[in-house]
Image 1 (tube, rainbow, N blue to C red):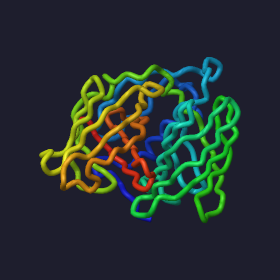
Image 2: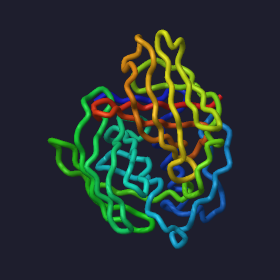
Image 3: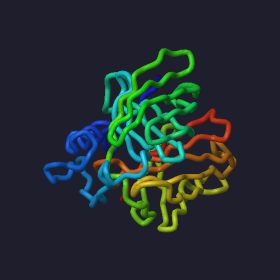
Image 4: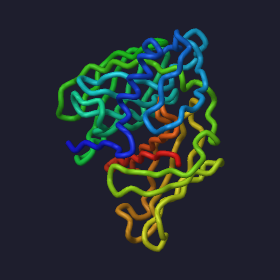
Length: 267
């Protein structure tokens, strides 16, 4: 399995663990102090999410472990989900993501989904877990592999209504499949990136999904020089939990054979 570390900062996982520790395991921060931003990034206001007693949905942002890998991402109330994962034993790197649909209730989450490890073929994956207001405990299993324990904590930061204005801007971007580039997001969610459309350019749309920092994404590559010319991709976009200038976009094609990750740092 190939791993990947975004060059502009360390990977997602360490900062996510800092947030979880500061929040006392996923709830509000008892000290009233916000988690420190990553080096080189300015701290941004974080909208407070609902307390466990106030929440009417088990959907939202979750952080924890899958076997000896760290995972972070979103499980929405309608069952859509995207979970980034690290390689075994190294929370500073990204090794892939799990994305798909499922069923989420107040007490249970189940999903037959797909795992997209970087540098390897996509795999069928199954998730099954019990859920309460603050935690998710169960198992995950990739095709041909053994079941691994899944232990997640709810992150309260992501409970506020989504705002496209919070992600608008120009981003220096890297991807799991190619060279760095630049993309822009408008306040109405239009995504544009790449170079000459006669060669290869990126076009897409973000729409509100659930939570202050998570959005549904649809995009396609336009141009004969693209690796995936004119193929539609869909998925989720979400902010880094500690440094809100960083945006993650995970998408997969309609056949669920190709999964792509974009990491953008706002200029």
